Image 1 (cartoon, rainbow, N blue to C red):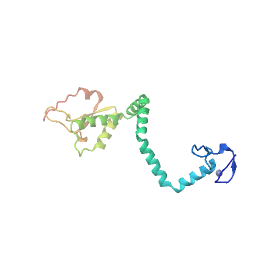
Image 2 (cartoon, helix red, strand yellow; image 1 turned 180 degrees about the vertical axis):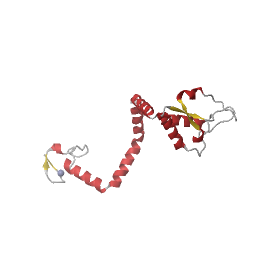
Image 3 (cartoon, protein in one colour; image 1 turned 60 degrees about the vertical axis):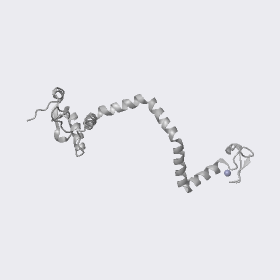
Length: 170
Ligand SMILES: [Zn+2]
């Protein structure tokens, strides 16, 4: 038995936490007094708790990053499957993103392009099983069209692939 100097109660040894540098190897407060003290301290020092957790996070940031990378590597198949599933469920968005990327690469998307309407146009097209086509091709031989709503048209799926990149000046 050991006397807790906080609550002044004689308690069984196993109700005291271990403390290696104390004379009997135990805390002088019992577990429940320690717990109560910690809870009260946390309540009265919310800023310090925040600061400590921030500091702890900073110290652990590298470890956490490595852990995340390891986790990702371990679950890479599931992650890829999840992305593929999302892409399968959002074909319009995927098409819009792909074409926007290509168009941006070709610098054919002016800053004033209505990107939201363009995306909606692609979603509408995929819902109707149609292909989006540039009326004036983005990479025409004589003139290059812009990736803007005004230059988009809907084509039945097959036509798009047959259409060449030629544009006849009228
Ligand atoms: Zn106690």
